[in-house]
Length: 258
Image 1 (spheres, rainbow, N blue to C red):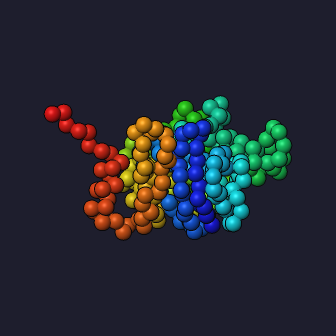
Image 2: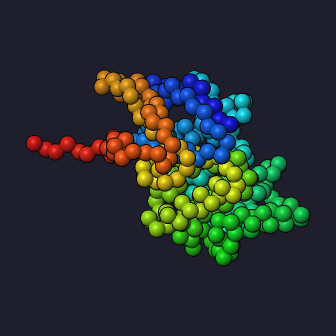
Image 3: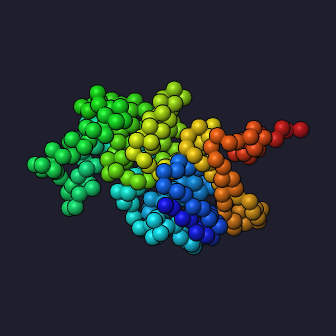
């Protein structure tokens, strides 16, 4: 489904990613981990189409990913975007409107009825059927992320992109969101890419784990080299030694003052 062919990404003299070569089958769930600033979110944005490779190509079904976001790719960020003056139901219905041709996105007649039905259905799937009339400021963090998932899934995407979506949630709520995402992944037959800083989360969710890291370093020019994918591991088949090596590298122990 996805082919990443010799992809590089740089901004002026700053090389963020280099020499990426991967294939992903439809229905896989890939988690991406790595140190801050190593290009995980940049890679996600290239899948979304809002960023383009500086070299190489990313193909979807054998064709280059369009240079713009599309309904076949839904994304959920850690910082969600909603209209504060609209209810939960109205926010999701507005997403329907923006997916239709035209400038305003307004819905009328049968179009509005269909949008309401679709919005109510997806909100029930994400567990917000009792919060249709609530406003964003009345929602907990977990409920807001459920709303963001509903908006992302409304267009029936084939690919779901999660960018640190659960990083700000309390552990208990995060666990509930994990269960929800796994259920939605199975039910909607999604292909999922999820960025996380939590290695345990990366190994709990999905089918594959990618570790982004810089293998080449130049102390005189730290931006000269970009990150590559240093590990591509099947989830659930990790020996403790390798896990500890990755964890220690992602969270190095500060040197003790002597």
